[in-house]
Length: 405
Ligand SMILES: Nc1ncnc2c1ncn2[C@@H]1O[C@H](COP(=O)(O)OP(=O)(O)OP(=O)(O)O)[C@@H](O)[C@H]1O
Ligand SMILES: CC(=O)N[C@H]1[C@@H]2OC[C@@H](O2)[C@@H](O)[C@@H]1O[C@H](C)C(=O)O
Image 1 (cartoon, rainbow, N blue to C red):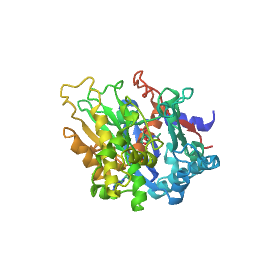
Image 2: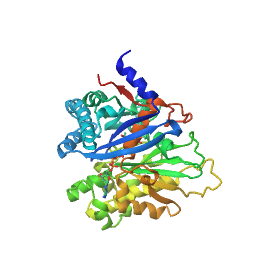
Image 3: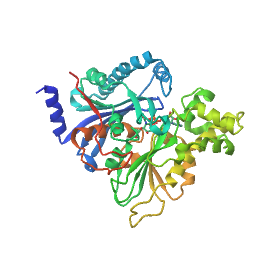
Image 4: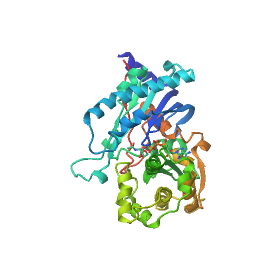
């Protein structure tokens, strides 16, 4: 037997595995590196987050990625070059983190690498009959494995698409395994570039849970912070807090079929980008809106679309203590650090309690990276949870395996 297959077999049989989850999201702020200790699988998954770091992307790398990011027309050579380049870079970033943490690569069982999403095109968006849902992540797993000498699992989203999903959101699997709690109706709200939430009903029914994108989280805020402030984001929502919401522009921004489509659904910066905002400005005759008022309106747009999606949740199998729309909301992702955004959400959901996933043992900035470690763990050792026969939440394990030698 190939000794590496033997090693894979041995890792899959261990009672506990050390897996590094890697996530670099749509904000392009950096690579999240989460070193996890994971025991069990499925609903019995137990995760300890041992170390976490965000390795910032250089401006040079951000600019390189932006040349091909979320665009329908790109330089194909750039895409081809960035695929191995990002794989190697992510591998090197893992090695740098391990050195800093004083941990040897031989003490890590696997890396779970999300890669860099460069284009996301669910059918609802591309609307071309003969083509399926589609999504593309680069930073090939073979380069991660060979660079680090550690077995890598990667490209998680393709199996989801192959099995009938949109390739996202995948958070439902990790959220259900890690955060579902009998007796509490929970919402796990992640506010990254795009916002999404997972619905975890109090009866813990796996055939009911789902995650859905709700629309923009920080992506539009960041784009205009770059323009108005020459900064990567509007720190603590300061500019937004100094402005006033424009009702006409807000209505124009909300006028998109994505918001009326059923759950679960996905979107991305391919739809919600500055061109979308500029079109809405023209439609609402607000082209001369002041920067602070535009930021305030964009914050309200993100907040309202999150709140309105929560308001449309079904309430199946309510538990005896169901409080009619009162959920325990646990936030994660960079948007939880923006009080303008969290305030606008909390004001509109007075019956909900709000906390961060930190209270549940997982740092909210690390949650998505941890998710991929959990998905890799499931691919290696689990895979028998049935999420039912529903569109968007196929009962499959995900991740392709790259051997380092
Ligand atoms: N102090 C802060 N004030 C305002 N915004 C903040 C603050 N800290 C972080 N953010 C926001 O969080 C963003 C980073 O969030 P995160 O790392 O969750 O995004 P991501 O993982 O790239 O996104 P996605 O989940 O869509 O893939 C920043 O770009 C910024 O918009
Ligand atoms: C295609 C893609 O990379 N989507 C991301 C993105 O970031 C947030 C949102 O849009 C979500 O759908 C997804 O990531 C998380 C981790 C998910 O799949 O659950």
